[in-house]
Image (tube, rainbow, N blue to C red):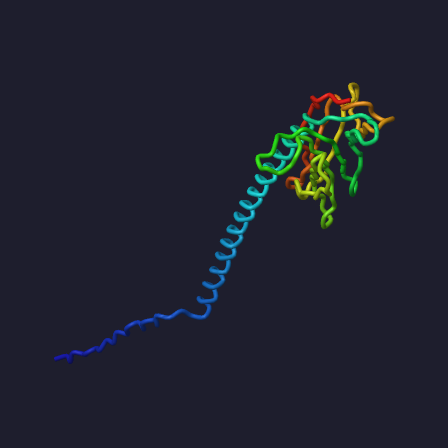
Length: 222
């Protein structure tokens, strides 16, 4: 009679892993989060810069349209007066000076024009002397405008019409060619130009673009 051999089998249960993360896993997760946040940060600020640039560009174009339209309307009503006896009527000239600033065109435009009556009760006439010129401000060019009632005393205060321009050029058409200087002071030009072309240069991105308007003085003066 054979003796049965009894075998005892021991089953080893796998050890259950602790629920925490290792230091390596935490470092990898932090690195991934850093990359993700950096990408989101860059995208957000790129969109913000793009939005700000678009808004600034729209505002600049609006100022440009307003300025060119205003200059055209004022030039359309420009007039001159010739010499007169002392104390009767002062000379009202039309002057364009060809200048430059940092190698950029910086014309000066001075003329007298008719303007609509004001809505308030201030004592004013319908004739205003206007001057457009370039002023250097913090190494940038600024187009300013001065306006003074012809019959009122005082010193006009320059008003910043457009900031950060790349040039302001005024050209006059004498009937055969465009010139950059004009002066109706006796002995120079005898009357108003046939047409006046005003050009404003702006930097848009990496390019410098030109925007122009042409005005025709319609008032005849002697």
